[in-house]
Structures are given as C-alpha cells and as structure tokens.
Length: 180
View (cartoon, rainbow, N blue to C red):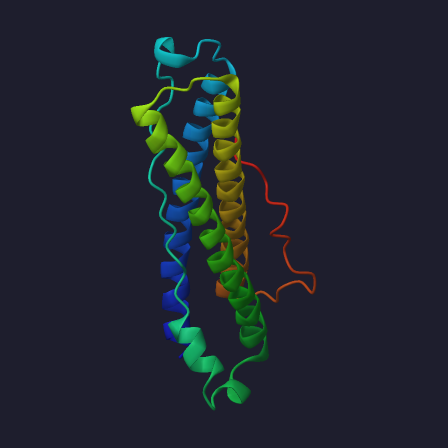
C-alpha cells in the first residue's frame, strides 16, 4: 500500500504542476485584459475590442484512492505514524482544493456571461467596463487561490514523499504567494 501511495503522490505532483502552469497562464491573460480595459476611453460602436481570449482553465484534482484505501481499512493502525500523519495533511489540503476550484469555476461562469455579451454588443459605458473589470478581477483572485492551494499541496505532498514529518503548523493556503 505504501508503494501505491508513493506512485499516486508522484502522479499528483505532475498534475499539480500542470494546474499551477494553467493558473499562471490564465492570470497573465487576465492581467493583460484588465490593463487594456482600465486604459479604455472610448465606448459604444467606436470602442475597439481590446480583450484577448482567456485560456480555458481546468483544474485536475489530485487522486486520493491509495490514501482512502489505507485510511478506511484495518491497515491504518499498522502503518508508519509519520506516513499517516503526513497524508492526513495532504488530504486536508486536497479537500480545500475541491471547494476553491468550484468557487473559481463559478467565477469563470459569471465572467464568460459578460464576455459573451461583449461579443455581440460593445461596451457602451464606463460602468459596463467597470463591471467587466470586476468580473475579471474576481476570476483572477480565484485563480490565485487555486494556484496557492496547488503550491501548498505540492509542498505537503513532497514532504510526505520524502518521509519528512510535517510541521505542527499547517501551511497557510489563505495567503499564497502571487505569481509574477
């Protein structure tokens, strides 16, 4: 079971690295669109389309089948205590990823609705621009949160893979580093 857990953790490392790169790509596009909109001075039919497409964001959830098998079996009492403690930490961060990813998805749905409207009708006022800026900003913040949780997951997962005892204080996933 420990080998299955290790193999799953290695797969999860690659998956979260993909998710981080995906978030970074979306954040860069959102930043560019937000700068372009902030500089926009002409509205209505003379307004130029200044937005670039925002890449579709997909969050792949780390797998936990091997951990669930150990956790929910009679094997738990005989498994190394450090391994059990570490994977409880991994599991906690993994659970928060699902919630934050859903929040990001909801934010993206709201943003896409506004962008779809802009495809058939140009921005007619500064108020409409500001509404779109708000939706872009909200989605950007959600992507930063997802990214931060993926970074936290990787740190905990890597420590667990290395057999290090995780700190008593869990990593903060509420204040992730912002990508550059």
